[in-house]
Image (cartoon, rainbow, N blue to C red):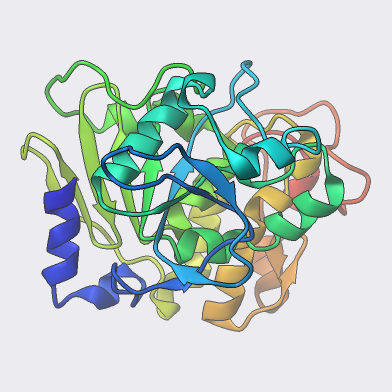
Length: 303
């Protein structure tokens, strides 16, 4: 991981990493985990940076049917003082060890850094997803883990793209924007680790090293939106009401890139084409009466 990250540090191709050098410091999210020094001499704790700047890592993971360690109104005070590593599920512990090992001080995990059960805090933080993921130095994707108890690392095998595409993490709707918005991602897949940034996907064993299409080019952004929507629509959501919120960060990103106006999952400037969506299989009921029936987001199912 350090080798891959060092390549980004020394590469002249930083335009391909969303024009953001990996050592550039950005304003930290509202809450982050201070993982402590790399030698582990101090326990991690939840930090409210109050606008200060720094480098941080984000964790993308599956909640599954297991309720991970969370921050809520009851645990906030304690977490601001101290978080016991023994109380954390394995994926969270692994993320802390990895962040320390990379020499980065801060880590962002949704269930720990957003107040669970607090609708106001959730709305505030979910509106900042584009900045939280884009400004992170690196995203750690617990790709193979169905929930946070399974951790990041598994027994090594020969590389296979299916270990990413068919993995539990990539069945989650929320994760699509998390990984697409991140400048750099390390996938902890079932077989090995994979390194991904805007124009490259490489495997730990060196057998896979592919050049990727830089999809945020202004000329192809509008067409690529529909590729993303097709992929997004097949993924699962715990709460059906999140059909549009789970895509809000990417919507904002495309709005900035194209200058177009979003309209319930479609685009005002491309409305006629956007209305030509259709379902792959019949669906029984609409997701929400708040979403107009002419929007693909009004139904639950693959389009």
